[in-house]
Image (cartoon, rainbow over all chains, first blue to last red):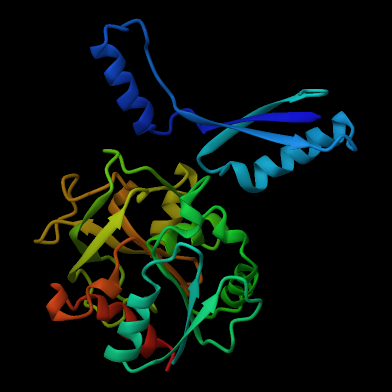
Length: 85
Length: 229
């Protein structure tokens, strides 16, 4: 089975209150070498075997742009894994 | 005026809007199930508050692809009035009928309380019954109401008088303390460029009877009814 692993996250410069709160807690836990935390989403798409790698890339790109990410505030990237179990 | 209130799975202010429009303002009202493909001759469309599709993915992101939204977009493009309240506002942003996007509230809390709103533009379809700079009292109830707009579009939104409501203190001063969620420019409600699509985070339907603490919300509905009659 072919799988797309999609990461969606807030753009640089956009305030991420979840990341900020997580970072704050890390500093109180003495992980003070962590300079910033950003929280995003990880989404997997399992594709049928009918599609070529290129088709999967094209479809994933469209799915990200149309639905999974809001391009005003979010960026995304993805990896394609063929023959994943 | 014949109102159509769109009901998504997870809408929960649909009946409140219905009640205010029907019982208090004596308008014709109907519910429109999100799977419908027509607006059943509605003359104004309301996207009510709630948690459409459980707010999965992003608020409004899934609801915007409901079958009825194609018709709502068409209706809006024809200059007909559409009002989105709270989650309805978020859906309008995701649909692209209004500019910008919603972020999580800056202090990560779901905020449910009365706020004060300054009428920034009393000439709009949705605010013409208000006085310019009038201070309204209405409740908000949201987790994602932190309005964001790309910096290159900000000047235009202000210059076109699309900003209708801004969070203020009881005296009408726009202050950082009066901004409950971190919205850019203290924005609580905006219209599209043409002025026929309005999105606001406060709930006018929860502030249309004295018993509920405020009647200021009526001004919003009255403005719309007057503008189109």
